[in-house]
Image 1 (cartoon, rainbow, N blue to C red):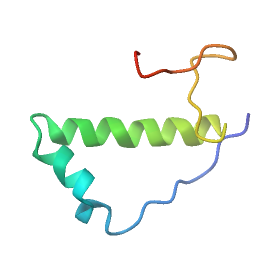
Image 2: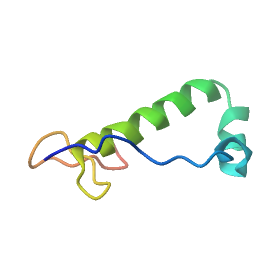
Image 3: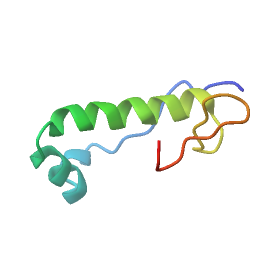
Length: 63
């Protein structure tokens, strides 16, 4: 699969109450970085937002 070259993030993302809630948590900054890394991984895989470890194993909530 070809990865996308960019992901679209709104300029007011840090005004979003969900992001503010995450930032207020212990290690919130780390959680935000992890979230961005997941977004980039989804872009690289370019599979309609589905993340997978390989061709057959998909990430689940339990992981």
